[in-house]
Structures are given as structure tokens and as C-alpha cells.
Length: 236
Image (tube, rainbow, N blue to C red; front, side, top):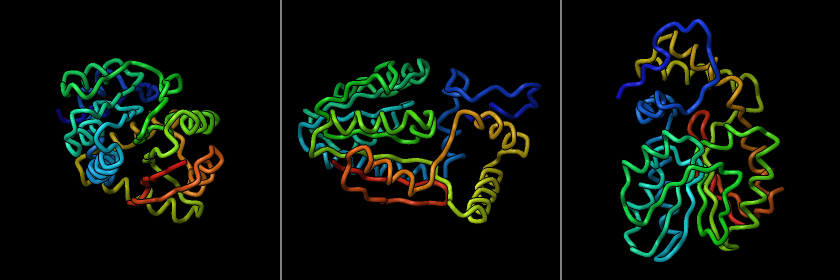
């Protein structure tokens, strides 16, 4: 279904939320909004699948409709792996359950900050930290580092900003132009930006890497960068 959530002029812009309306158009919304999404998800799935081996446990935190979970399942055919998709949006979880019926996966309605990932071989946070309050990010990462396997792999993908204001403005403007090229109108772009203003706060790559290490992770690889998006492979 085509994303037209912000097509019409709204008298009052409310904070963005993963509602039933957003869930219905989410695949189209994220494809036309996040540059490189169609690369990030398959490669995340490949990296996670390889690390799981034949009997590993993975958590897809903030799983939305389960695109990353599905990518992992497609890249690892072992019957003995298990993937838990976690999200606090009921419409997203219901959509994931309907779309993915592979018995190796389960989906749970839960706050990722309350999720026990003990024994996890892989934990994925794809475009999730940016929606948490900045003060909540380090405690979450510390909790994950403590609970997951010491040989585990954490995969984090995020929208990032540049420390140089001119560079940030340049890429931000190019991103807006890209969204318009994908069929979004000036009104749609402006209204969605307003809706996200209070709920999505982004960091620099350096801030992410410093936070990973402060949380107790010792190996940080940035495997991907496209415009304002980056993805990291992180290990204890």
C-alpha cells in the first residue's frame, strides 16, 4: 500500500507513532524514506545468519513488521535457530505474525528496554535507538552487553548526523530532494519532519562508537554508510 499518511494538510501535527495507519503503509514508507534500506536489511540478515551458526538465538529488537527477522531466516536454513522479534507497537507485531509464519521465529509485544536477551548470539537494533530518549541508550546497550553471549554480535543501524554543520545541511538537503524524487510532495516532507521532530533524535557516528565502548563492547566495525545512515557490527 502506498504511503499517503501526510498527503493532506493537517491542522495539528502530532508526534509520529507506529499506529495502524503507519503499519499499513510501512514497507512503502521506509523504502521511500530511508536511503540504503534495501541494502541494510539483507546484509544485516546475512551477517546475523552467519553468526548464528546452526543453533543460535537472535533478538530483533524493534522489529516492526519483521523485515530483518525474515532476512535472517532466509539466509540460515538450520531448523535449530530461533529468532525473537520484539516491538512495543501492537499493529506492528500483529502484522509481523501474519506475514512470517516460520516456526523458527516468534514475535512478542514488549518494550525492548524490558526484554531479557540472556544467551543471545545476535541482537539487532535496526533504526531503533534514534527513537529512544538519549539518556536511555547507554543503559540499554550496557544491559545487552551484560546479557548476550561474550562471543555475540550486536548489529546497530541508525540515521546519523555530521559534526560539521555545513556537511550535515548538505546531506540533509540531498535527502529531502531524494524523497521528493520518490514521489513525496513538499507538504508530505514538511509534515512528516514536524511529526518526527520530538521523537527521533540522532547522533554522530563518533557518539555511537564512543557509547558502544562505554557500554563494554570492545570491537566496533562500521560496515555501511550512505548519506545520513550508518550501520555497525559490534562485539564484546
